[in-house]
Image 1 (cartoon, rainbow, N blue to C red):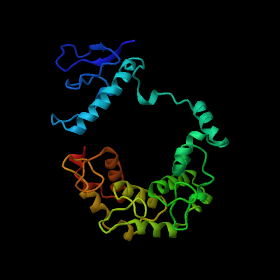
Image 2 (cartoon, rainbow, N blue to C red):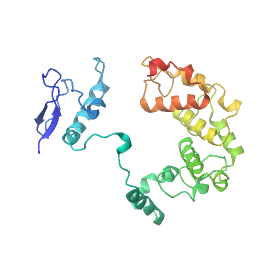
Image 3 (cartoon, helix red, strand yellow):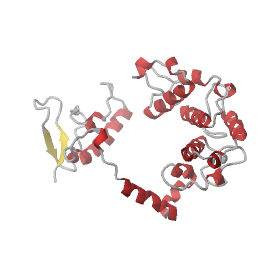
Length: 268
């Protein structure tokens, strides 16, 4: 079956597509017509190509050749009309009650995240450390990402027993030990600092009613310094804006009630 790719931007037919061999890459030097939501997701280099933008384009082109043939197979429909196959999802998720297969070994340090995607929540108390945070697994170092996931799972359960898994006093002490003089948070003791840590710290603290003045002091100012000339937000001040970091930063500012300190016009 031929692989389909969008025609170049100088075509007269905005809806026409051309066939190329599966082994032929899309012409990386030609603008890609944006006629579908899939094409709309492709990156732009603002006519200022760099080595990294060229590499990004090559990756997108190699993937696009496999997605393009299916562009017309699924009829567009309103989001509210998309079916959710509850029985099939339930059957798949409940397989985790019988234990997880060997394919999950690589996620040994990410166990709290599995709790948000399946029924394996009864052991979250086992990954709580004496310092107050949650590790990725029993005996592992307390980490903000895993702690964020664990607290979210416990909040979703929502019972008194679930919240009693967390020693709130120790958890706050641990969060404060991760806070840096510039208002940022490191992900773990001796770890990297970026706005992921800011979001994970504030979101989990909000759920546990631990947003103390000491914890939030200077945090909003750090996030504001992470906004770049592009309008997006980077991991730390002076770095390139990134979608994931922008999400974390904006969500953190919403938790603080200070989103207006950002340049929202530039962001949007």
